Length: 95
Image (cartoon, rainbow, N blue to C red; front, side, top):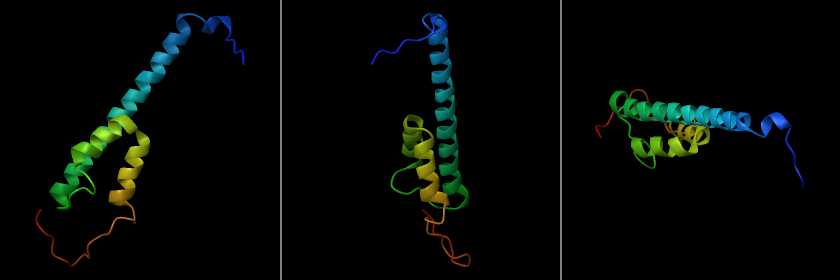
């Protein structure tokens, strides 16, 4: 299969677009990783719950590489109805 691009995309313009897409993706990954890290600390401090499976730092690192999809898995595991919630009148246990 022979694919040809218009002449305006054969030079530096294509590299600029690729760079902008890469930079945007990196910003989104860093933002979600930062949010996951902050949320994991919030779970520990305010709700006295540890993160599931691995620690918060490892969740953030996984989100840094996996992006939005890993952040969605984090949310499903920790904040959706899949996450078992302790009863409201039950005392909280210290970690």
